[in-house]
Length: 154
Image 1 (cartoon, rainbow, N blue to C red):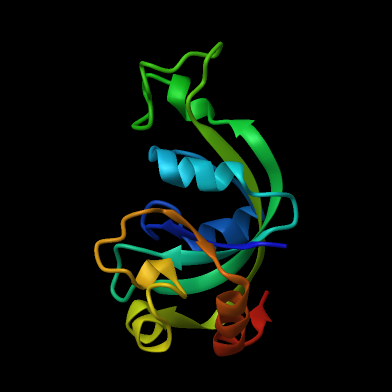
Image 2 (cartoon, rainbow, N blue to C red):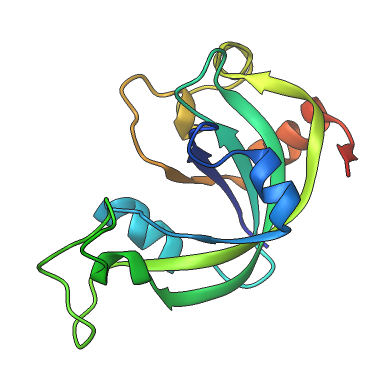
């Protein structure tokens, strides 16, 4: 099982939204490197839910990958802010995955704490200027994160 860190702005889609819905289609990814990371996900992988563009940003919950290799429907919708006119149903450019809510952590693990606990090589989100919304988390770093975050709340 691999681990990932997936960012979302809580005003757009936060951990409370995922908890309420139980599962979500993680769509709207429009960066090729992030898309390729999503393409390498497999069923059962775990993802840390990270609230970005908020004060303070940080890890708030945990998700599980339940479906992969899905075509992102928002790329074909002209009314969507994720519409891609260069993409077609015959040649889609963007994928998405389905993720299931596993729980919320009792406390947010802030970016400031992450920077104090991890190097850039250990956890990509602490790298200054990193804008990717999906990042792999090395196994040793995932274990340390889970230890720092403590048990999940449901």
